[in-house]
Structures are given as structure tokens and as C-alpha cells.
Amino acid sequence: MSKNSVGFIIFGLISIAGLGLGGYTFLVTQIFIQPEESGPRLVGIWDALDDDHTHFPYITPTNWLFKLSANSYIDSEYVSVNNSGTRITLMKQGWYRIQISVLLQSLDAPFIYRIDLLKNGALLFLLDFVQTYTTTYDPYWHSINAEGYVLSDGNDYIELNANSNGDIFIIYSTLQDSNQVVIDFVSN
Image (cartoon, rainbow, N blue to C red; front, side):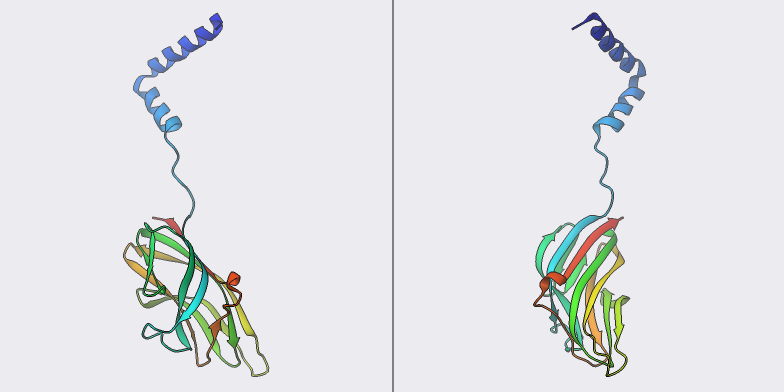
């Protein structure tokens, strides 16, 4: 080791010692502590959906709940699923982003179809709406890609409700790649 290198090392140590507590605090807070995670945290993915008619009052082919299937990831500190896969409990206080992608089939004219996000059994907001106006217009299929934000107190639960004003419709389950629910924890 050269005399210059030794001199720089000694100078550095003297400088740090001269800074005292302030230098130590700087080193600890700026160098040795890992920064906190930023951005949304993925807390659940379900890659298959089904319609569920077993939980009152959502017991008809025109008013039912989405059943979550094929869970590919869940962070059990943030969410849990119960009620036969239809109820998602948001277990930490904060904002959650709920995303749904689904392909519906058997839509006929003239009817109205809705996908609602329910919080603690009450309507929180409408995620999707389609209205078929005349009997000559027959979309039959409807693709949904929607998201919404929910503020949880750490004890809230959500459900995804599908309903129409009289027509029977279903999830197109043959192509499950089109059907997915993703939940992110966004912030406290």
C-alpha cells in the first residue's frame, strides 16, 4: 500500500471521527438502511372466475356473485377469501386497488347488465355497465376490464356482484385466460 493510500484512509477516519454523532447518523440513515418499498404491493391474483348463486340475496341467474378460483398468489397478511370464494376480506387498513377482467356471454337485447363492487354488503360503486337497446342488436359477448379503489379500516370485506334487469347471463368459462381478479395494496 502506498503512502498516499494510507494517508487518505487516515484522513477519512479522522474526518468521520470529527463529524461525531452527525457523521454516524448520516452513515446509518443514508447508507446502511434499506429504503422502504414504494408503489403498490400485489396481494392477490385469481386466474379463474365462476358465477355463484348460493349466497342470499344473490341466488338467481340474473343476480349473482363472482366466485374466485385458481388462486395463483395471495398475501395472507393483507387479504383472505371466504364465503365459498365470493368474499374478500381486506385485513390491513389502507387503500386497495381491485382489478377485474372477465368475458361475459349470453347477453341479449334489450337488457341492462351491471358489475358492482360491494363493500360490507352494500353497493360501493359500479365497475361496468352495458345496455343492449334493441332486439336487432345482439352483442352476446361483453369483455370487461375495470378497476376501482377501496378504503378499508382493516375489517372490511368486498364482493363482486353481477346483475341484469331480467336476462340470464354467465361467465365465459371455456376461455379462463380472459378472467382474472387482481388486488393491490396501494397505501395506508
